[in-house]
Amino acid sequence: MPDTAALTAPGAPFEVKRAENGSLMYADGPRTLREFVETTWAYGERPFLVGGDGSRLLAYGEFFAAATMLANRFLDIHGLRPGDRAAVVMGDRPDWQTAFWATQLAGLVAVPLDARWAGDEVGRALDHCAPRVLLVDGERLPAVTGWAERERARVVVFGPGEAEGALTERYEDLPAPDPYAAPPDIEIRAESDATIRYVSPAEPLRGAVSTQLAQAGAAMDARYRVAADALGRGELPGLGPAPVGRLTRPFSGQAALFEAYGAMAAGGALVLDAPAGGSAGGRTGRAGTRVRRDARRRVTRVPGHRGGVAARPVAPVRLLARRAGHRRGVHRRRLGQDRLIRTR
Image 1: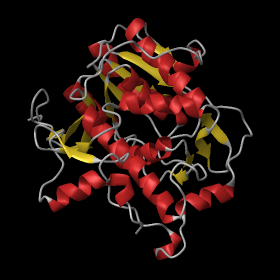
Image 2: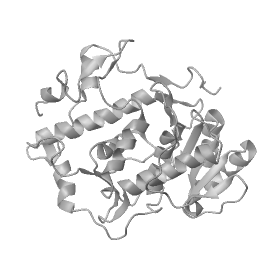
Image 3: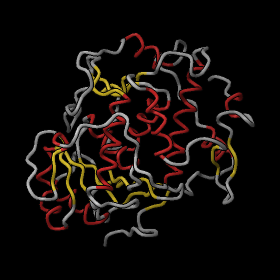
Image 4: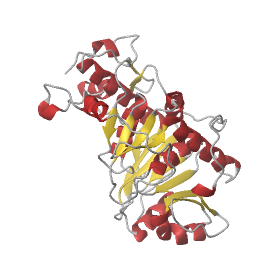
């Protein structure tokens, strides 16, 4: 395990301090997911999402422009407002990331639902969280059409699928993203809700609401791990090759979001194999662009570690919380508290 004291010392990039309420937090860094994702624009033509064969599916610049276009549309055309909820119901396609991060740029609360859930299970979750817009792929459109019509919710369909009804539109039919457009000019507070996640569709519905500060802290954890991994390889953080990792969990799960944070924190790429429960299709970048396979191996394998895979260092906020004998949970609450209640 590398010596990471230089990363967490006072004045260092990952210095940890206590907030007024006693919780542990990073002294510097993003306080919202919007602040985190806005830094990825600078990566430009670097690949963000890559196919299993190494072909580029989406570059950072293309991704940010698409997410910005959709975020502006949510507010300017759909009439949504920060704090409204947006359900993401699709398989592991590149557009999933575009849809999710568009919600964050618009200040919406993302509700990622498991693409493997049956139609009645999805409907139960939708009844519970009451989203104003559904971001869905064509395969899962039939499962939400009835609910959307009954509740008069907006629907954006990604990939093949018929867009019927005045409140439904196909993502592929929308105007081309403007690479120079800015995200919506809104204020997103650190204590605002960022995501709602359900543990399972079983009754009673259970899950958690995470604030912007909690998710931004998780993104900072990812940045820390990238820097610590670089130290473990004997490199100066930020000067080595861009990391390339492989997606191991469905996009709808929090673990996959952490993997995305890790890639985005350093301008790295995330490799999508043939996904379970979804297509890797969607709007893509320049076809034929490939990521070097040796770079993919370099970031994930470190000599001397078990199986050749580097052990993940514990993020400083979590490590200090363990030493203090409590969990970092003040910015994460179970469904059943505040505005969301458990179904009976």
